[in-house]
Length: 225
Ligand code: MG
Image 1 (cartoon, rainbow, N blue to C red):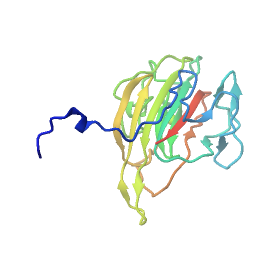
Image 2: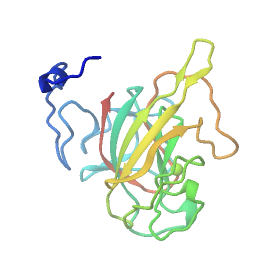
Image 3: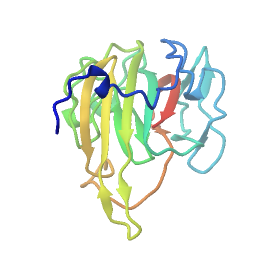
């Protein structure tokens, strides 16, 4: 290779990144799919397809007693996901029983949501854990009743037509702007009991977990990657 002397020779002019309005704390980026803007649960349903029964109030949704998980009607592959959550200001229970919910990618990979502010539990099950697989790098949880922010970058696993996983999933998570999961390989489903499983699947819903505690969520949006 001849030595390059012209700085212009290494300038790349295509493709030009398209323009996106980045939004702000209360507004999603212009190219995001908004799944919850504080007004309704039209984008959500329960596992059985029934309309989502969680409570919508003052710009947030709240887990309703005896209701169940809610799932996005849309299914996704690789995404950037923004979700804000708040655990009950009145502390009830301890460990896994205190402010438990979860953000699931493709219905099977849980990033734990828990009141992990001065609350001891197994670290691979605390807030920000890839449940039972990866302990968060730090604990960035704010106190009960305050708003936490998750920004999640998810690369979905790939399965071939015989059902073999040919490329693992990966997850990166920022919790309140702090990196807590750094391109972590997903070993499979996040099981409560036992080891991760790897049944083949395609795109899946984002799921918010019902765990009996009245968690609140707001500003849920997705960018497909
Ligand atoms: Mg959970």
